[in-house]
Image (tube, rainbow, N blue to C red):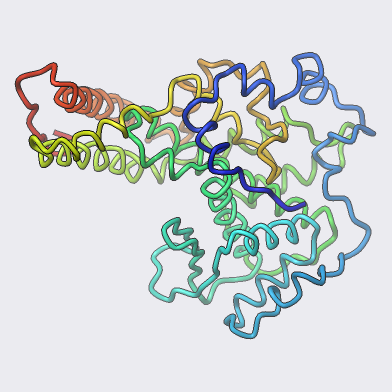
Length: 371
């Protein structure tokens, strides 16, 4: 299936005004939700393992043939697209990329295996990688594109979020993309697609994919609760390699906001623009609603996700999940660093906001990150 992007007004509503009640309207009623998440009969159409059933490789839709076999693409890009076109889910991802003008390019000097760049709507891929790993890396980056184009995650990050919200959002975006790429790979395996070299290199997605593949064939299939426990949570818990990167990002954005406030001086236009960013920051309810749109397997933002279950409490969503780390050393050493940095950045940002509101006569100093 192909995704349909929110209109500009809808996106603003999701980012800035969506209340918890509105979010629950998008999900199922509690009784129906419990049925889907906790007790799904094997014949239920909402079962996750049924979403992309197929007996054979589907034909490439006519409107995608020129996109899949674009002579302007590098051979590696063509190979990736052709492999995606072997499953219905892969076709849906290709259609999403095409409809949202997401470009695929090779980048020999890329330090990452693949990277989505919102400013240019580009997925850069480092050449020379094995194909099966690239399936998961590319699906991961397309999911980041969906987070940007459909949910408006980048628009949200461009506002003045609290440091803890910013940290939390980064964790969720990464875990959602990793879990989604694992589901995509599990669907490939379940569909009988011949596995190409490179499967084991895409950890932890490949490990999660094998678990999901096994659950596809269980008596009750894969349901939302199992997807959350087998895919989203393991992806979230294994983000320790991103710890410093995510925290540096929070500190950098906070300090840059402070620099803008100080540089604005008495310029009313600049101060008004900064004040507008503050006023457009997501409320706690809107932020919670946004997070609950993640943790799903669909490109349709109105479809239920694994995080919309009533068993996922607000405390779990906003405080437990953002701190989860399975790595022994990281789980022991990093939380104090995280807590201190978030506290420092929160106090600093609050100080700059007071300057904007003219409630403090003394402008806070700019400390060095981690000081």
